[in-house]
Image (cartoon, rainbow, N blue to C red; front, side, top):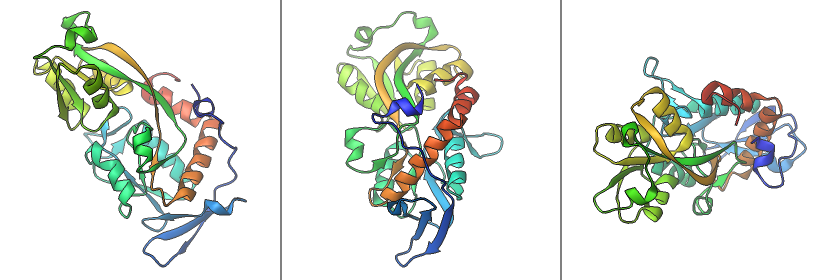
Length: 274
């Protein structure tokens, strides 16, 4: 599903987003894209740069290249392209725990945006603003391939351990739908699937694109046993006091969608257009 059809009402066609930058009093920086909309002015933590918070633990969306130590993935390419559209450099902060990203953006002062396959939810909307969605997703439940057919009912029993990533929609789903199992909150999906591989956990739940990638590339003795149709959408988290930045990023996303760049990223990182 394309970006233009993911959000009700669609996206307005963006004007040129060349940015003129001027320092301001208050420790931040005011940037005004070259558009007809005065409300598009926004602030940045650091002059000429968009600073990104991510957990870098969700290949192929966002992760650290073991050889170079650099952040990479679908979302890293996407936010770099957004920065280019806005005439900014892009800096990705060192990896942090997923459940700290939204509070960090809400607090402000350290990062401009959160980009870490963050599902748009009503609860998170209370803390931060979100851009328009750039990807639809569901959840994936992983077991050992040798486990054969697995059902929610077979896991929803006393003594079954199900690993999740703390603070995620996958964790919320497991807690709601597997109340009799022991839900184990961990820092990232790789640790969760490793536990499944070693027999420590009966299953692990996380975002479907991530689980599919892990089972295909790194944990070939595991399987996505259940695709959970949660109907989620990912958005970029922005501080509520910075609506101009949300607007500017939405304009850049619209241009990237229209140019076919997001489709190119889907093929590059996910193997096919979504």
